[in-house]
Length: 242
Figure 1 (cartoon, rainbow, N blue to C red):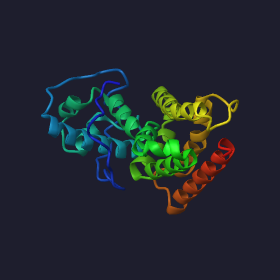
Figure 2 (cartoon, rainbow, N blue to C red):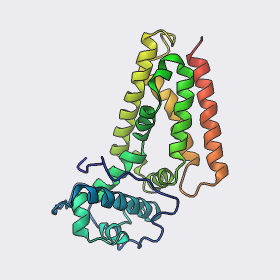
Figure 3 (tube, rainbow, N blue to C red):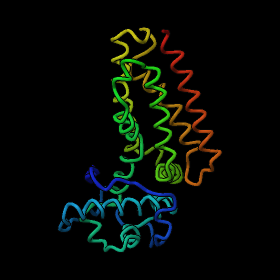
């Protein structure tokens, strides 16, 4: 991925970008084509501008779809020229991948890093319940729900970039299961560490797709949380026989 996603975090309130202009058309940079470069702005300003561009792009993508949003529309939504946008992102595809990196499957890794790893050794069931609860918290936020609507609307649910990030998230989570298997906390023979990681996160991800979409009502969000927490309870009962 060509864009640097280390800055410009997508901290978006509900309705952010709602006043963004409608797209001028489906143009504005097909994936892998038409990449352009301009002089780069100062680092501090770059982070603020990048975040504004990502917020505007997400709102427009969710409203009009990926193909229906142009680079020009994204730039205009934050009062910038296309040349300034290209100083931050090579293409529309790079913007999409930056949004996907922050709000997609890799957000599970971010949540994982936020939980005290001592809990993983002292109380694996408690760690898993905390992880699932915090993942649902993250996926319930408006920008995360906008992303799901975008992915399902444009058929991007099968995009290779999404598949790659799911694999990274599963492999990262699998390291925890390696740890528990080696310590004898999980019975041997249940499956590989990646099988177990996938078994944990897949039903939670399904709850995200079914109920945590853009425009989801409080009841939908509550249903997603209930289903995910019930899954976590059943999972730990099946995995940990202590």
